[in-house]
Image 1: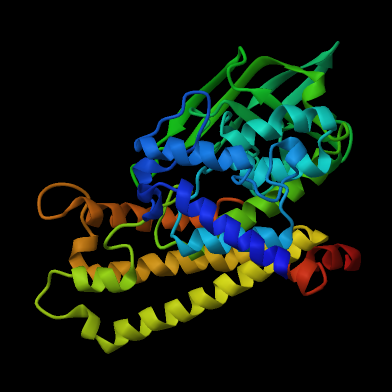
Image 2: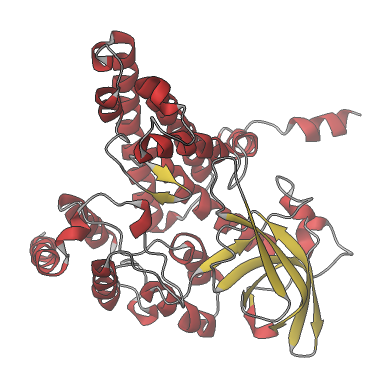
Length: 411
């Protein structure tokens, strides 16, 4: 206990000395730090905060020091997170490399791949995107057709992906490709990494109903990738893909914990809190005095607190070596529904001020809520639809029989 108390004391001192004051405020969309080869820092202190965290490995505190991480044990990681929350510190880095790729590289990558990629993720030097879904392979991801053919010491990749988040801004991609067409669809898939600056790659942003364009179509035309970039065994990519999806779903579930959400980067505003939105209402009556609305807000806050505790318990279990599992589907499903519910209540609280799109009569924060309400609807699709999550929960958590398999057996 004394060692942990000492760690808490030293951590508190370090944070007080090294976390800039502007990094102790709620995150705003423009100041989210994604890193990469050509990073943008709207607030110069964001760069200072990232560099200081990365130097200690605290952008990835539980990763091994050998690969740039902080090397903290479970108890130390919990203390660090508590101390960061105590001062309302912003994340130093938002990264798909941290939330998705890094954990599977630690589990499936070889030593050379870990040494090459993990320290760069910790320091925010490379921005990653995900190449999974295809125009004809969404919920049925295993039917993907983007192919990789081995030619000497490299693969030649042809095909396309869709809904690749920020592919137009990413430096590297972790991608599922078909390396065998003559075996069952799950058995012929491989997991490979490659540079988005490679010849033959083009991206085309997709504009969403919210007005944002975080997703892209991505095309591969005879893209050459070193064979050494294959992660894990040839044709065993589905195993890695499922593990990464569990990490992704856990990440997406955190949408339900955010006070605001915009295209996978948490944001806040003066109207993002439910009480703040009710007080922001411009009508004649006091919205916060409405007993029905107050009840909805109270119930939402209770459910959010319960979800936060459940999520923390799941994270602590994963740090004990249990790893992500089907629980990620439970968290993803509930967290996304919770986030959608938040925006429905926000719409009620703001009244007609939540229905603007442009023009006079609406301020920027009100227009943002309108767009984020629309954006929240996609939460139940991305990372695996809610229907897929419910099937996983039924089979892997509740142990219910597979009805489709039963029907085939009885035919």
